[in-house]
Length: 400
Ligand code: T4K
Image (cartoon, rainbow, N blue to C red; front, top):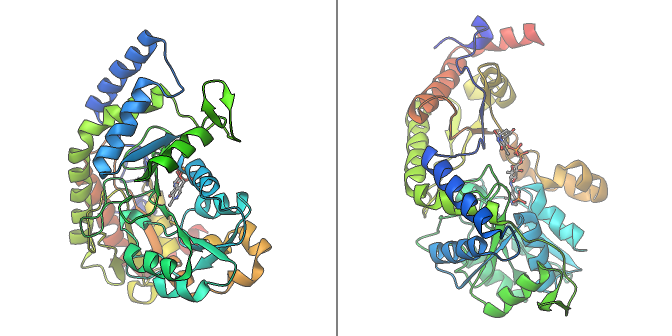
């Protein structure tokens, strides 16, 4: 495998992104049909028939009583905090999560207190959650990073002992589970993201999963201007409704999901096989103790053993038109906003810092190339770069 770094000719003709949307030809066809039907009905938004059907399908898929469909997961979290009366005090949040998890708390008047990850799963370390509890702690929000469910039994157990509310960020965890238990079944509400980059998408979108009909009713009021009955603003609410067109895309994708998951699992397996011999690359297997949708694939670069660092590998791949991501480097605690606002937190998480300094996420779906060929090519670029680390490092220095 020749590298574009040396030849000037990228191995991929088209840019390959982590999170490039997955839209099968049949999904596209079904979407057009469903969207046309919405136009025929002249019903485009506000709790329409497609949005309702989507809620039923998502609830059934996760075996929960309620799925409340909203405009995106960030707003899902916001109204969930509102519905639970969480608007002050501290909330323990893993630093290794998307910035939205922390922002929704801060927006709602709570102080996020960032906690360490468990390097094996990348999820909130329950022992550090316990250490971060103070007399101001009101909630904890674990994130199921890359679809590996957090240690919910331990986290909900600690929270119950201390009278702390739990909600979980299941943005990555559509169709995932922990030992057979899916999100929404740990006695606490959880929220999914249906962003275009996710395993399951409605362009933008999200849903709150819950077993509690009363909570779902409140959430539906909050998403629709606080209307408690037609034309009756019985409470304070916002507009978080999603559209029939968004729901149409979600419904159109549902029949494709098993096959989509199988393709993503194939990509994961190819990465595991092909990258195993590369010295200094530790691979995140993703299936520790549960079902995964394999939308994300991450590895960790040990610069000493590999002979080349994470950022240099990302640059080699970029030259070959492979656009990697470093989720969630540098961690929320080091995000500019939080390190300015809570400077004491910036240097408080050595395990998170060490892990995120090495992380590299690879594409799991490909444009214009068969997924197996795409994954093999990406892996071979990495193996080649690691195998010729001195020449690669020298060429990158010359380019700088
Ligand atoms: N909690 C967690 C743990 C999350 O990961 C997220 C979102 C949330 C909460 C909040 O969920 P939402 O409110 O978004 O529903 C993204 C996404 O914007 C965000 O949704 C996602 N997580 C996060 C992990 O990634 P970026 O900036 O890394 O992705 P973006 O949109 O630039 O897409 C990645 C690449 O994919 C692009 O550079 C190009 C390609 N792409 C993207 C889109 C949207 C395409 O080729 N076509 C496209 O349509 O933030």
